[in-house]
Length: 458
Length: 144
Image (cartoon, rainbow over all chains, first blue to last red; front, side, top):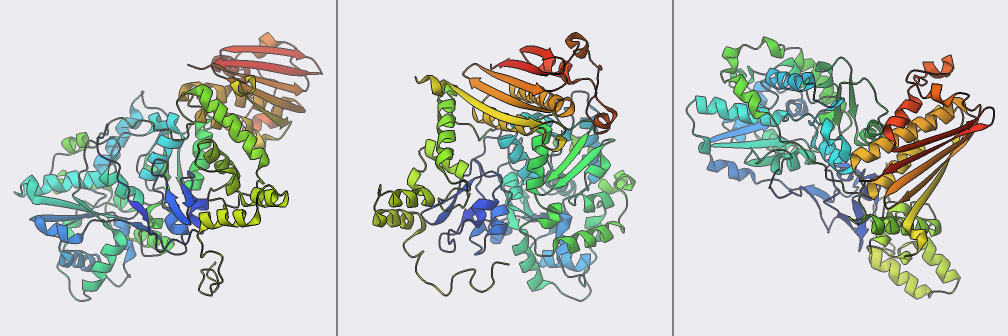
């Protein structure tokens, strides 16, 4: 398996974080705790779905990206980006104007990642036709879903389709094409414009691949800003040759049903991480029958709802669907246009097996784990069941689990503590100090600039 | 060690006819087994068997309970119901044999695979039944 270190793409800005629990409550894997008034991410549990980033009222979550200047060190500077990005720009800009803008930013070659799509479609068909394949086969397209399955539904890792995502397809394709044109491999720098955090992690420390194929990652919203600075209204150079392998299937691939409509006699498409969780639960219980293929994406409206996008997701979908109508079907793109050996390209799309990484285990020793769980069950009896988050854990049950893992204590529950004060078991001053310790000393001062004061809630 | 902590007990109620909520006990049990680090294949078998047992209660009986006991080496599940009972258990064990009503079949249940599926997915299965009184199913699965 990949010996690459896990890349933690998602970070919390300690200055901006106000420890408000929005993120903690939205996390599908209970990976966030508020400690000393700040959100802390457990990177073992995090699947990079970006729910916290979305939920944060102070934009305290940020995504690290590589410095755009680093592209200068390569002779051939390739920007790889999902078609979704074209849907971000105001409609008055043509595809050529956007491509020209990207070149002005400093790139020499522009590749939308969903090409040549027929190669990937054929490759996935091969997997589905294989008798050994576990059905329903689940697409690995969304890396947040892959991580979710590895951690929370480990038995379903064997249903994952071991074929790489479009960004790998285009990366291999770009390399082959440029080498064909006379470039040397080390002169080619590949940069990926990402629509989300999960893709960054997948590109930087891929699952089922030995090394990352790209040299750097740029956040799509930042690249969008860079392009908007230089984009021109006038006549743009004809870059259509860069799009001659782009197909209708490729353009709509990242949208909901973009994959599932091509595979299996019966297929399902699911978007939204919480929908995915509910469905995986059923799937794991063996309550889903007769389905061949499942497409599953963490974001509502799939990648059109990616957290690093600028435009409105529904308008992006509409624009891409309209754009797709102008492009040929993937199977109608001639080999002479593709120019590289598609069989060889197809071979490069095969992933190593993806291993489970269960992260909800109470330790390796079963007896001890059971003791801990029994203890947690007993603790829950004493907690109020309000799931208020004031203890810094997302719900009472999570707090109980934290307690048995020595990560929290009874007095973290403000209700329990209040009861103890009432019973005279601890002093009021001590109780208040406990709360201050958790939420900071300034927390309870009157502050007219507090978030939420000016109808900021909705 | 305190014998209390050597095992875990869980209990659930099942209501006859409530197909919407069938599957809750099996989901809960699954969660616990996962936290205990039991391997996926073993969990899957247990969950399938328990779900089938739940659906049987929902489809045929009036009400029932699920009692689960987990210890270091095994899980014991007892599903008890008050219902019509099974007149001929051997016949019911045959694949495809079903007494489910048309309504239940239209909901996608009652294919006659319940008991055979439970048999396939458990290490020990004991069924006791009394006509017009109810049925008790005891399932034991050993951990690896």
